[in-house]
Length: 329
Image (tube, rainbow, N blue to C red; front, side, top):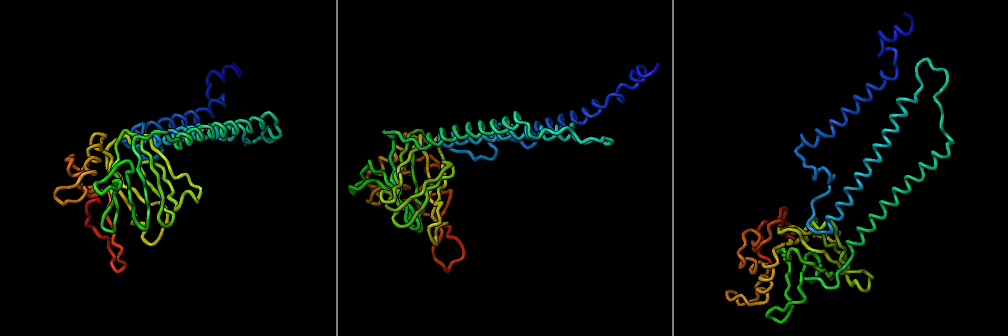
């Protein structure tokens, strides 16, 4: 018999490598199973998982930024998995074992390995930088002929939105002015290129619609402050009402400086803009933003008051918010 027979009778015990591989294989299988089970048991779709917490946007620019975030996160996970795998491999197969006299084989001062560990991260950073610049350039690109132009004027502590290519019955461009008791409605069409020109009447504010996924600082005298105050979005992808905010601490009532974007179809938008340039026969005054929306009769989307946010009182003696909401001007 001898050694050969004993090896045949006890093949597993005489192969130390196979004994070490089984726990590692089992761990890898459990990890893979967890990656499949967790998204399914939490009710998340593949798209939601691949967002990695990134919010849902409503513009092409927002989607471009979301894709950059998704693939950056995927690349980071791949790099992390390779790094973790290399660490576990070194721990499992190059540790000092019981009974060993000599330390594990050392690989310091390995020039090819050090060059590899320098070149690969450099390539990763360069690729990430290139994709980031590409998306940033797209977000900042302006079309020479936008479909809609809107003037955004910020002041303590509200907003005015003007449509410079229109004319109200009083001869001035159509505009919507927010007040202490009125949330201003910024009515915009879906599917059209929109250009915003912004300025401030006093301090620095910031125009922020979370669903646009980026904000723009609003400077006083932007031409003097060397600010590019004109920017565009390629369009709004879906109808809806979206709260807008000032994202720059601008004074005592900064947190109350909200507005509402009301995105409607291009056909409804054209009708709304036409009404804004007419006189309301009931009030004998130009249609307000809310009155014009109400005339369209398109359900909640044409509600004359903001419904994603509401005005706050500026009376310092009151402790609670003012709940009533009046129609947009």
